[in-house]
Length: 257
Ligand code: NAD
Image (cartoon, rainbow, N blue to C red; front, side):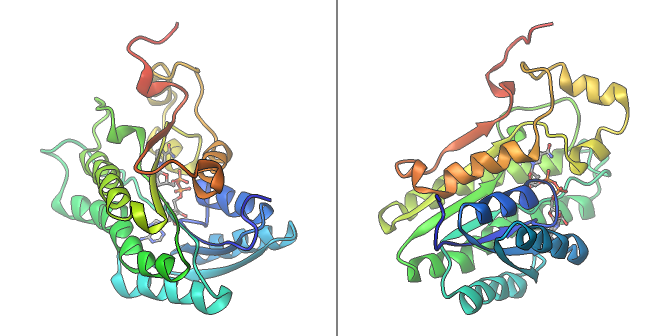
């Protein structure tokens, strides 16, 4: 088992990447603190982990709030004694997000507060806990849109993921000699609720699919396997990376027909 006796916080654990990662990390021996604002989904994830023989608790925390983030770290240390893995994965893609002219300030603020400030706050309170444990790993979920621009306008989301990617690099350098590794997982377009509700017509889906060399959307379970690699000693010499798991989209200039 690759995460035996490790404690992991996984934000956004109620669905998608966070749920799949909770299940996989638990199978690999980790104790999981499933964090979300969706209490029903979060508790469902915990039940799924327990049914599979793993150990998990649910903790309600809005990652855009400092007191909530501090409390989730305390919950992990209180329940499991330490924190080894912090997976800052919660995020939103709001349907009102568009180009610079049409995107309202409230949409910008809400997106940046959850996607970018949420990662900062997780690290702000999580890094001292990782130090107390003698080191650990942080995985921040960015996106392929932190690397590539698209004509499908979502400026707030794209800017938030750029912030996650650059913040990850800097934190990785700052903490490199403290046995704390920090990497950015950059998923490609996934077949999860988040993207499918944004690409809500077949035409919009095809417009995105035609750019993916593999010709299909990724699965949340494929991101979980990548996150496991980043969380475990398998990636012991990797920090500050832009870890793109994207069906080849960021490598492509022209994709096959
Ligand atoms: P998802 O919508 O299934 O999961 C996101 C989770 O975050 C949800 O459970 C939601 O309730 C939770 N959340 C939202 N706001 C929160 C808050 N303030 N505090 C705590 N939890 C909150 O989507 P997903 O695809 O699993 O997304 C996970 C991450 O992957 C996100 O950061 C997303 O931006 C990123 N991502 C997704 C795709 C994609 O195509 N789906 C591509 C690249 C990156």
